[in-house]
Image (cartoon, rainbow, N blue to C red; front, side):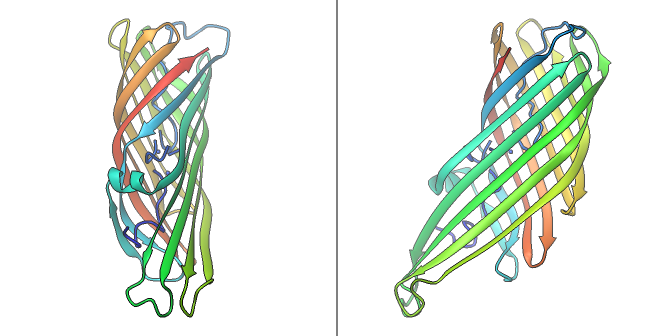
Length: 265
């Protein structure tokens, strides 16, 4: 295991981000939402829920425990091998031109290894937890029988924590933890366009800042509606954040294919 990697992850694998890096960032507005029924003016709420998997890798710099930032470059397979628990999902409630959107990702990873000499400590265990959640609202500025384009905005909450435990040796039993929680405001656009009765294109792009210097998320996907209230989506997502405060550095980009199912009621 790469010790510089494990303490930082997950983010991710922020886009509840099964961090099967998991996966719709998050970042959180999700493109994994079902194709519109076409009756945009219907006087009723339409709700969609979308569990998904985001097979992302993660790259960037991370620094904790007051140490200088270390480079991070881990593939999806690296992340999966150390994942203990992960969840990702998105939801949307839509009424006429208005919409409410939520997206969450949670990942819990762990790893460890023997030290080189075993004097101060014989073994090091590292666990990492990451959560990111988005909650926002949108308004459709363009609508047609085939789709819509929404302006969206909201807030994204991040939390990342790492715990290091030493076993054996002089420092055996020593345990240290470091964590950070921050909130960013993001805004952008989200759209959907029906190619025919079954296939449709969907995606979004948001960017913002707050306690982080930069927070962004972009997704493009194609969906297939195979039943009246069920659809599947396959696409590509990239999510980035640059947080640096009080010695805690989390400057990473996650990207990779995303796949999910959507149920609408």
